[in-house]
Amino acid sequence: MASTNNQAVLDWVDEQIALMQPEKVVWIDGSKAQQEQLREEACHTGELHKLNQEKLPGCYLHRSDPNDVARVESRTFICCDKQENAGPTNNWMHPDEMYPKLRKLFNGSMKDKALYVIPYSMGVVGSPFAKYGFELTDSIYVVLSMAIMTRVGQEVLDALGDSPDFIKGIHSNKDINPDERYIVQFPEDNTIMSINSGYGGNVLQGKKCFSLRIASHLGKQEGWLAEHMLILGVQNPKGEVRYIAAAFPSACGKTNLAMIIPPAGYQKDGWKAWCVGDDIAWIRTGEDGRFWAANPEYGFFGVAPGTNVESNPNALATTHKDTIFINVALNLQDDTVWWEKLDKKPPENALDWLGNPWNGDCATTKGAHPNSRFTSPITNCPCVSPEFENPQGVPLSAIVFGGRRAKTAPLVYQSRDWNHGVFVGSIMASETTAASTGKVGVVRRDPMAMLPFCGYHMADYWQHWLDTGKATENRPKIFNVNWFRTDENGEFIWPGFGENLRVLEWILRRAFDDVDAQVSPIGYLPNTKDINIEGIDLTEEQLSGLLNIDKDLWKEEVENIREFYADFNGKVPAELWAQLEQLEHNLNS
Ligand code: GTP
Ligand code: SPV
Ligand code: MN
Image (tube, rainbow, N blue to C red; front, top):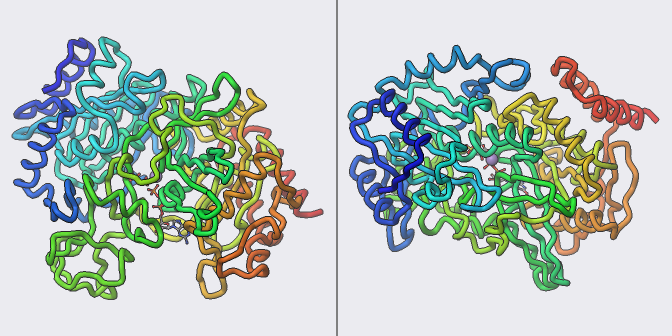
């Protein structure tokens, strides 16, 4: 069992024990033996189901409660002293009100249960940019998932030493009561408390709670950025690897792009792609003035449905060992897993994600929940970047924003300069997905894909972006993409997935001033001849359609952005208002 002499840690853990009153306390040491013992225990209680160990070695299935299958934004809070510091996009409650409310819920919540103390690190343990935290939980599923998603155990305690600088997190499944579910961040106290949920995004605190909500607040104070971004290295035929970071809202293609496989013709010419991260980037300005991005996580918590040998073979390969699946279907024939679009042969003798008998008839009921996921170590990924463990991260040549838009946004465009790029990020909008509870397919503004994850006032966050870029000439160029434009039948026009490399090629050429572009009201657009469509089922006419700007739709967009900005109580930076006026002017002239 792990141990520490850190008095600040010991005192804090003691306080939590007194509050939650567990039957026993187990310190997670990160050893294989301890993990194995916990897996056995979880299989015994039914919290985990052991899958076919020949076909899926080290793989398990977990089902969360049917009322608890996605992030719940309505029950996620930023609690700081002044409401104006949380801003209009976050739920807020004063800490003096929230702490007593939560303490009441946590009071005795672990009676007859074990409390697991998970010391974890976001970032390479011992590196200057790593940040350490603790999650105290009563869920073995959380322990085992955190051990995949982050670096855990004794090495973290050793690196922390006697420093009082750590994130304090507690979690209890309690009764999974949705009416008393809370996911609460206290950025001013570096504290996280989540209760009455057992779904990954709400309770694997290293991910959204710490690495985005708490870390974005830390980044504002310390001068860096915590972003909801994948990090990808693209290697060209000359052998040069250039890095991009891309922010898309939940379930809009980050994991897929992060593991992209270049189209056959590109591979023949020597193109390769390397995954550094699929969800979170911590970005700092280096001494050379470039933006350096590191992935603080150690695993993927990826959307299962739609993942298959054609769409994302790297993700599929990643899930073939040491993976915890949640809310997918169980094939009783051979004790393996199945989800929609894995292949065209749903199992006939199966249990659906609810654990009910299911005969593979997808028309009646779904086998897997649309937000079912796999939890796998990044080191399983065939295209993991050799730079993944580089504590300095990788230098960015481009930042890419994007969303799911059936119309309006073109396939790709480039911002005119840094401030315009920040504007493009601030006006991001996307159709909602199953990653969060609520209506699916409604267009909502999701600035920088951070709407549910920014731990402070969104307008201050935009100011921080403006300032961070202003401080250096070597900042990356900013682009926007949209893989999701549809035709009159509602079908996606752009083939997407691996073919997205064709767009990345243009982005990187622009980043290195290697190709011309057309000036348009919204920014620089590619000349159609500069997007390579050789070998794909897309006509030049369709391509120019994908790059077309519908001025009327964009004028509606301007009105909508004006209303959106007006919600920020006069705090939207003047630079961004000026960009909006420029856009309107460009559309009218
Ligand atoms: P989170 O884990 O929720 O942050 O999601 P994500 O942004 O990593 O999204 P992910 O890559 O898991 O993709 C979500 C869905 O988008 C899946 O159903 C994919 O099949 C689909 N998708 C991803 N890339 C593309 C693309 O290029 N074109 C189309 N049409 N669909 C895509
Ligand atoms: C997202 O929703 O952006 C995810 C999944 O990456 S969760 O961890 O649930 O937030
Ligand atoms: Mn995500």
